[in-house]
Structures are given as structure tokens and as C-alpha cells.
Image (cartoon, rainbow, N blue to C red; front, side, top):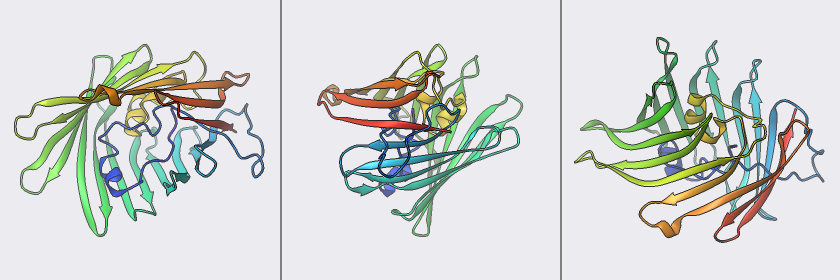
Length: 288
């Protein structure tokens, strides 16, 4: 449900973060505050403004969310470490006067790179048409593009990802397929596309479950997919995610989120547990 700032661990993450399924925020888990240095969370505000994830005694991640005057998400600032690696980065979301995303800029000081996604809106059909992704690193720029495919209800059912080739031009390399249950995305499937045959090979998937409580960061269908937060296209909180490896099924696992809620039915704390394995971490939500 919420972004935990794992974007930008290494250069390859910048190059592929729009193309590969990730569990960085798939379980929607937001996290526990250090009450010795910060005040207790305001649990009854309307906007989620802070999430603190504690993975271990030495690893934690803090995310700060910012909004425009219409309470639309315009930024996520992430600081912290995971497995001893600094994953701090800043994400700026630019919007037009109607609130449509026009550009997403992610800056990672550790990698020294900038990932810029320019987003194009089809005013005639009132939806996003495609995006162009540029990653700048060490003076070089890499360019990819994503095209959005919709169903009759106006929901994105597929994204086709093209990589720029200096000789062959843009080539289709991966695609994501989205399925829905009610008003929520319930699965995302990832396919690799053979550059010679054009055949798509299904390699992995994420399957989402939801509770009946109030999601404090609901995104539109297009915004959720553009921001790589598919489970935030839901009125409810993502309380489970199943990771499926099609070719090596034993690599699969499930993360279950157990939330506590405030009087507005919004999450206050959460404990996430992975099965098999039993790994777990916890969190707390801050509202304003």
C-alpha cells in the first residue's frame, strides 16, 4: 500500500523500477515510530504524512508524504537503511491544473542518478496514454517508454514497456497485466517479451488481498500504476500479498499484514509476517 523507499538501491533498480514487479511496498506495511525522538502519531488526521518502518534494531525507513492544496500526493521523501544499505531518495510528483500527473522525478544521492518519467495525458479519452522514462547516470541517459492499455470501463489492464535501442529503435521488452476485484487491483502479472519472436513469457505475479477498513492513501487507477503502488487503487487496506514465481514455484511466499485501526477505521500500527520463513517487521502510521 505505501512506498517504503527501496527505489534506488543500485543503478539497475533505477533502470528497471518501472518494469519489474517489486515487493518494496506490495504489503502496504507502514511502521513503528521511535517515541524517544518523535511525538506519538496523530491518528485522527485526514492525511497520511509519515510512515516509519522498523526492520531490525539497526534498520529502519522513514517516509514523509506531501500533498497539494487539493490533498493530492505530490511527493515522497525517504530516508533510512535496509540491510545496512542507505536507500534514501526523494520523489517529486508534478501535476497539471486538473491534477493529472505530468512528471515524476526520483533523485538518489547514493547512486548519483536521476530517474525522470514524463507522463502524457489523452484529453479526448480522459486518461493517461503513455510515459517516457529517462535515467541519467554518469553523464549518460537511458530512455524507455510505457504504453497503457485500457478496458471498456476505462481501467488499465496492461502496460507495455519499450526499451530504446540505438539500432533497432524502441523494442517491446516487458509487459504487466492487471486484474481487478471490485474497486481494487487484485493481481499484477509480469511477462518478459522475446525480442526475436515477440512471444511473451509469464514469469511472476503479485496477488493482493484487502481488509474492509479505510485506506488513507487512495490513488486513482492511473496514478497508482504510474507510481508503482497498485494496491493503493482501493478504498481498503492491502492486508496480504502473495508473490508467485512461475518457473520456480518454491521461491513463492506470502506476506500477511495485521493492522490496528483508529476510530476512523484507518491503520495505526501493523505487523507484517512472511510465510514460509517467519520473517516479520512492524510499523506505525502518522496522520495530520
